Image (cartoon, rainbow, N blue to C red):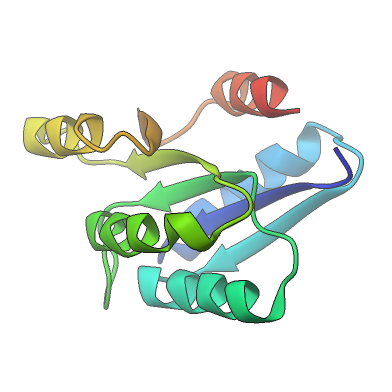
Length: 133
């Protein structure tokens, strides 16, 4: 694998900062991090990459509650693009929500690898990236 590309789709700047720090602490060579503040920005990125080419994320950390397009709406759009992608990311839906409906909805979407609750523990991030590397 040339470069491990991580995408963080979340509107919470503090969360993105904390996750970035955890990712860098893992000291993975050739780690790239792309951040989006909502699902619209991320889908625009995917559409642009489909047209122009370029590297796609290996792992997506996807928040549920965001403005413009939430995590579930993002997943609907992402599934529509799946056939055009040369790489399918492992998607971790992330939320501080303990709403059982969110968990159930996430479990029903086969493209979601796992639903994980915030705040993350460093060990969980390490476990996720070790399986992808």
